[in-house]
Length: 220
Image (cartoon, rainbow, N blue to C red; front, side, top):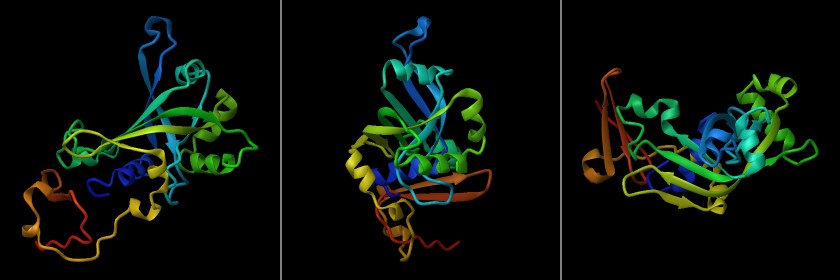
């Protein structure tokens, strides 16, 4: 998604990535009250299906994340474009603002078999994470959804931007993927709107335009 379409960027990363770094407030005696983080597999739809923006995941009380959330049900989930190696492949450091990241804060809601979205969430998780089928019986995992309170997006210089859950969910799923249709001349784009990165390993040039453009056509 283009620069400044923050809701679409948030939806894009949540849909594209299969896991998150989830932060909770620790209940471990040695670091009680400290932030704690864990890798949590997620899905917002079955693989190949449209973006929903809904963040589904499994938890277990045998792991500290589940225990932490039973004590204080507050979490933040981090999604970074570097998880797909997109940034390092274009020689962009993971901490650069142009390596887009989204921080989604909220609470974990357990889904039960009679909940309306249980079957959808289960199918989505099994599609992206087949190993999850074995977790349920062996380690007492239970299905959850992240109920969003705040979304923070950083995808360019100038500081973070905040997206309401309402704007996030009303984003058209088709906008998550942009189709380019009209030609333009790179020389007509201001240098401030253009970021050029030379990828030495593949000997390619990656160009990211930070404003709305219908199509990119490049002659080499």
